[in-house]
Length: 341
Image 1 (tube, rainbow, N blue to C red):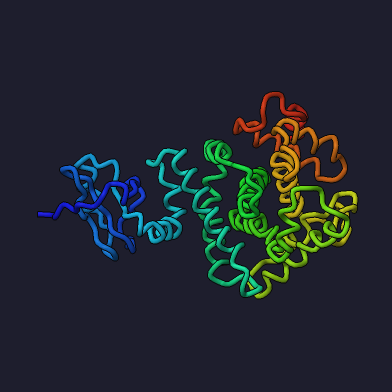
Image 2: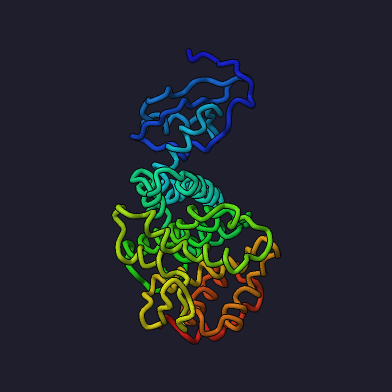
């Protein structure tokens, strides 16, 4: 008979048994609640089997428990199985959205805050690629985008900004009916587009007032710095273009090269719009962000000629379809008339 473990309840956290996959191993212990205590169900390193799943299902188990001291191990297990978790239709979409956002933020935060060595390590890059590949299908569906959109918060953290840009960029890119590998490449570009800011002095990034011309010039070096940080990684030319050119403008007024519309690849134009939209709804440190409605209006009017109007129309469509654009989103009728282009 299994031994009931007498450990305080707050030493555990609950997870859905649907997040434990047959034929996988978890480097953590799993407990069941029983008779006022917790019973050890699987040991560290033990393989989850179909029999485990069947037993829990027949017993009506809706929660299993993991020791808080093993939370980092559980998080890594979820990360490694993120694609399967997001594809699991038995898990409520809101729960899957929360898992995606939590895991993604954790991965990107670790990659962006690990400053040494001065290039992105292969392990961090592999984790990001795996995460992007796992989330593309989930974010392509209206209910997935809607659920994640409800979780997007704006606390001025670079890694959260990058996740938010990923969500919007993939939603736009999907409307062009590109293949999955192109979606993954776009996602990688979105995640890494601001990686160069990790080598910009923190006092500039966190200054709560408008930047001086000198500080602006330093900040505008981040695309080139980003390309250097990713040196040696197996990045495609498309991803490197996003990192280098996401601040270029249609009229040639952007930086670092002043490239105009005809020379900007689709992936760059998509991430540029997603990045600007996210910045508008977040706002700079010294003022509040705009509502989705006003941000879309600003893209269409205040920044007319700066960003690809077709990409903006598609952003309006996907946000409206997911209920994230607010009522009467500007350009919505025009976007419908514009078609897929």
